Length: 185
Image (cartoon, rainbow, N blue to C red; front, side):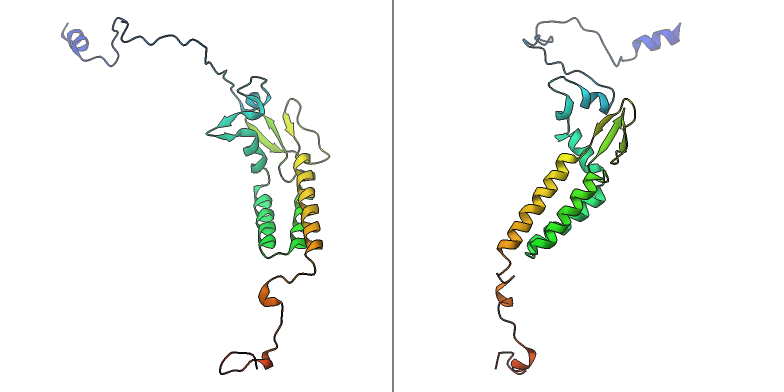
């Protein structure tokens, strides 16, 4: 049969060669097997040393990514507002934004989540997680935001008598400036 002859004469994608000492890799002395989990929930709930809350994907902690993902718009806006007020040395404003972040985190609108298999959902305050779900509330982060607010309030209190910038130390009225030279009269 010519069809059979053509099929057997065609180059094979996979060929079997006898294993030799040069082609066979040595067995590792210590097993480096990492267990496999089929869902994120199994990864996070695992008690294996390579898994659990320290599970990484491309160098990022899965738990940390889930924390930041929940309410990320609020998180980005609030962290940007805090940073802007700190740059402008408006410590009391930064304190109030930190308190707002603490409140939103306590209410579950930021950083809290429940994980059921691979499905991530919000976990609002005063609600119960779904049965069998991994649940994480951001109370420790809310405490962190409150500590930030306390630090910003203390810094604001200590700096309240200082001028914001050197050029604001002396306010010059417009009628005291010479229009031709731009210098004070």
